[in-house]
Image (cartoon, rainbow, N blue to C red; front, side, top):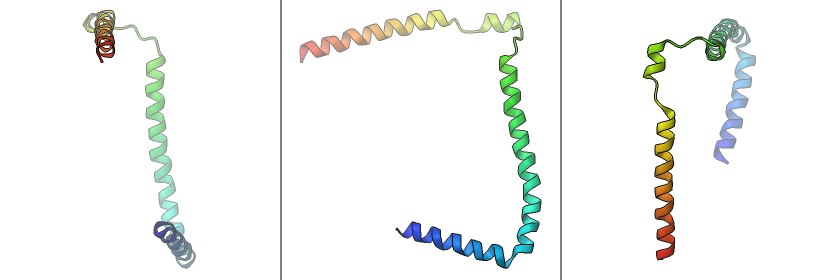
Length: 96
């Protein structure tokens, strides 16, 4: 309840402050809007660049392809580990 009342009081004082200092508020807003547009546009361009880069079918270099991990071996290792843990769980269930 205290936070709610504090929020209402802060919003009310902020509204009074905007009306009391409307000229300086507009100057601040005039300087902040282009900065927000610049930073927001740069972020959107960066994220768009990453998305486009991921979708383009660039041929991989042979060194990178050879150095990549073998996912089939890892998957088989994790399957074996899961089977082992599953059997241990079954043993624990039957023994208790």
